[in-house]
Image 1 (tube, protein in one colour):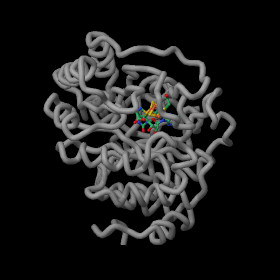
Image 2 (image 1 turned 60 degrees about the vertical axis):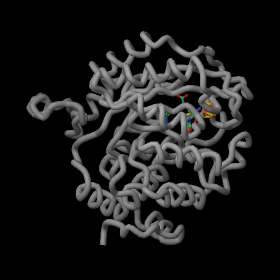
Image 3 (image 1 turned 90 degrees about the horizontal axis):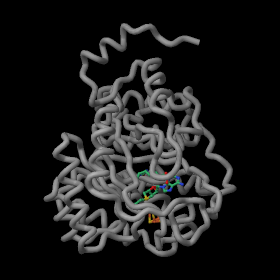
Length: 334
Ligand code: SAM
Ligand code: DTB
Ligand code: SF4
């Protein structure tokens, strides 16, 4: 058996999948991936921080928290025209989804929220899929965002329920589940994942994957971030996540959430091409495109284009004709 039954799996069952011989795990994940997705196609999203820093939450990993001293330019909410100009550039660079992130604890009704609704409608009108991550939402806000044209809402569980309190004290796991419920209820797609390399144990990684796979329905998009350790945050000196731990998490997520986009998110600048290739083989089929995530670096678009060409991957938004041209281009050996 390769694909999972529709019943939620127990933590113990997920652990058995996760802990198997690594290459057999990757093979099984690749088999599930091929049964559910076009295996050589990667969805490419572009990310923009529309409001940066001075966040009241105390997420230990985050350079945007006002509790820490990361070197960061704080920026108020961007002007709508500037956001739309960035979205047009992202589309021209090949992105098919545009994700707007704000360093807010929660969205607040008023002038800024109305401006946000305009941004969402404007990005949608450019022909891009829309995504936003704005902190907690109530049902009415979720409904207004959906009506404005928001396709996806990103809100992560971040880690296991047990490890969570060591990372964030200002907002609970239950708060996060409530926001996800509001997003679902409003009819938007759910983008929900977490971060690995926060100093958690193996059992916490299983716990996170179990919590994500138990959401009913399962999230359509699952970002798997590797911690970007930023100076000035409490996790600045956390040892880097080993590549095989990330690969196991990606492969397990693919097996237990066969329909989801599994996104290889933050942390790709610390991964070799070979490790990324294994993650794509194991079912990762979405990335952020562009040299900056929200505030930290992401691979240069040229480096991603070269990697895609080596691996025979194509961007989801790219026409099959231009992908065929790429196939006939001289491969960059060496
Ligand atoms: N403030 C909103 C919230 O937390 O819901 C939205 C923006 S927040 C930056 C979005 C996500 O980015 C977080 O949930 C976390 O998973 C991820 N993130 C933040 N800092 C990170 C870091 N240093 N390394 C990896 N992922 C990070
Ligand atoms: C997600 O899971 N990863 C993205 C997106 N959702 C918003 C954010 C990654 C942020 C990495 C740290 C930074 O650049 O500030
Ligand atoms: Fe604020 Fe989001 Fe960063 Fe937490 S992850 S400090 S909520 S911006």
